[in-house]
Length: 221
Image 1 (cartoon, rainbow, N blue to C red):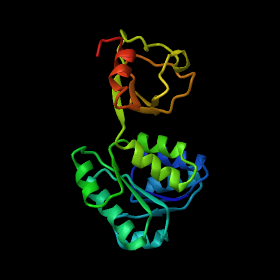
Image 2: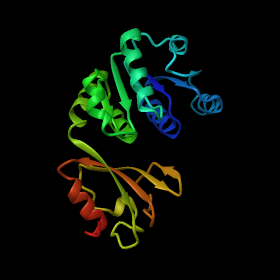
Image 3: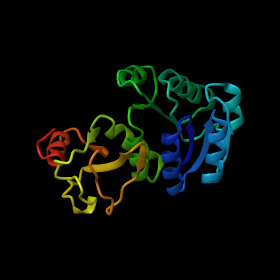
């Protein structure tokens, strides 16, 4: 798929790496000069340095008829504007708007944004599962109403504390997508050991959320 990542820092870096691993074509638009240099060097891909809210910057990116645009700026209104421009001016097939305020999810959907979510890691997981644009669309449409992202702070009394992820009996519909440890982001694998004070970002079904919390916390949450 041809994809645009507009704005963001840690979120953008995480998504870009995920997209490239899946062999998608990625164009990045970002208004931070130093971060643009970092992204271009780290990921070896085209980076347009400028504010994606400006038409002249979007023109420079040459993104006409791309498949997906993901807007990651910290301001929800900016992300809405970027998605609107992408659809109306550049005929982007699918726009994904990541918001900070969950109250904007339904509002932005009603105003025509294809998919509005409040968790970047959820986007990454859905992209990882998708092999075609149609699959990606179906994944977004299916999961945005059925999955939730839970943020769980680990205490020393939790059964998961000091365990490797491969040692846990994690239900099939539960994924530990990211661990925040001392302001650093860790993309976990089976050998990753969960530590006290870790912040787990866990994707699960809505139906399985409470069971997951009880299992991870031992009923102490």
